[in-house]
Amino acid sequence: MAETNWDKISSELSEGISKKQLWRTLRQFKEPDPTWLEPFGWLWQVKHELVSDDKKALKLKLHSGQYQDACETVLLRPRPNRFAVCLSTQVGCAVACRFCATGKMGFQRNLSVWEIVEQFLWAGWAARKFSSKPEQPVPLRNVVFMGMGEPLHNPVAVQEAIELLSHPKWFGLSLRSITLSSAGVPGKMIQMAKRFPRLRIALSLHSAEPHKRRWLVPKAVADLKLLWQAIQEINAIQNDTLWLEIALIAGVNDSAQDAQLLIEFCKGLNVEVNVIPYNDTSHAPRDPDFRAPSPEVVDAFIAKVRNAGIFVTHRKTLGQSIQAACGQLVTSSHLPSQSYLVQ
Image 1 (cartoon, rainbow, N blue to C red):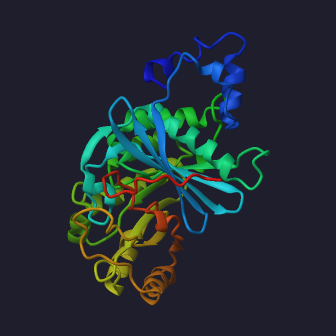
Image 2: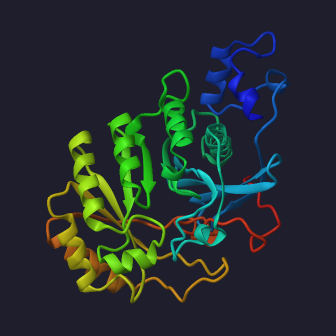
Image 3: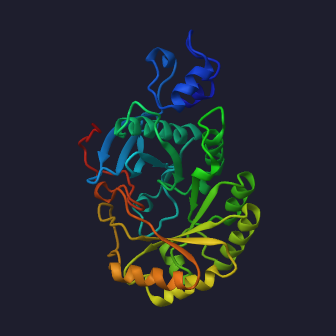
């Protein structure tokens, strides 16, 4: 919907439909009667729906008629009838992580709050089609801000989106079911923790060796002491665990020494480590010769960190076959032009 119209949706509905009735319909991901929304136009149009080989991920390519650009949103189905959505907050990204396809695009623009929230709606409608029980309420109850862009480089829109997604009169999500992932913007991370004490926060750390982190994540804060202090403050505010994300790359950050440095970094912090083996980004230009470590190396890395008393999760990759896994989102001529619609 055009942004100004979204802002006025509460007061300019067609006759015969109340604000409460409309938002109940949207919250249940039922497609509303078209006459209800005649005064409005969508911000995004779905150009492609690609389903992963294992049917556990759906990638939506959303096109903006106003800006003539696109973003990608990923609907995940980790279990047969449970869904989560990975939302984008920018077109492109300025952080330029070396292992991330979005970073190859460079920064293009921030998304508005409604462009972010509308992704959630499109994902919900897709989930209803994707569901094994489409007649029942759609179990889309988890949101991760881990799509295209650095969320905390667009903090105002992201904060407003979280407020709308969690407001009981809107979508009513628990803040515990919303995760915000940042490459490292310490001040903004602390602000978000203060504003939303129950929000899950994740730091894309990737290496606890300062030179490696600076090389892997060139335009995020590399000062490990500053990041450590920010996590400690967030722990105090939230009294909860912060997630540390490590994209494990063969021969880059997967050694026993890398694991030991991570152990040292975690001392004094309430954190959980999420290990994500590198997802191939050869579909994006200028990809370095990165590859995922062998399963044995991944297991050894995890075991060393776990044996130090740190909780570690080996995150399962979903959506790799359609370039929808972590680090694979990109909008470019390299993407397929055909459409694979969910049946």
